[in-house]
Length: 130
Image (cartoon, rainbow, N blue to C red; front, side, top):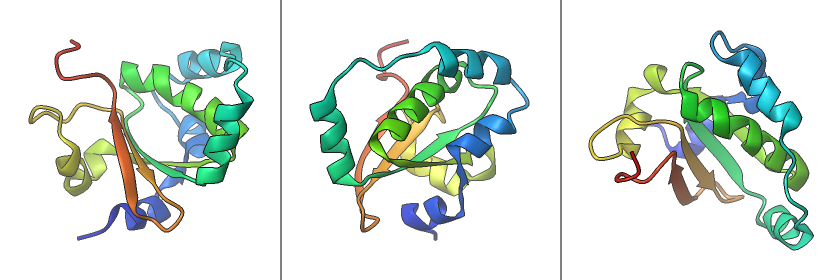
């Protein structure tokens, strides 16, 4: 069984993921181009110090991913974070570790420390949020 760090090492960059999208690419880039992060230098500095790696479980047909991934990319660029993506449907073993109420809801974001240990995971919405 692969670790989250091993999945991260084999994953594609968020930039490459966006460049090769087959669904929602135009909308994703429109969000990326128009979205501006609020100025918060203390938060950005804190993120830079953490040196996090972020593993995204995603699919390009997913509307939630279409909204969040380009914003995450902006944040990652500002804070020098490395974000890599795996496709949910191609990675069932990984996805099964991060089910939402038994379902395979995406996107999921797994935050890894500099050493590769899992620090946290973030889901697209709370279980009762839909």
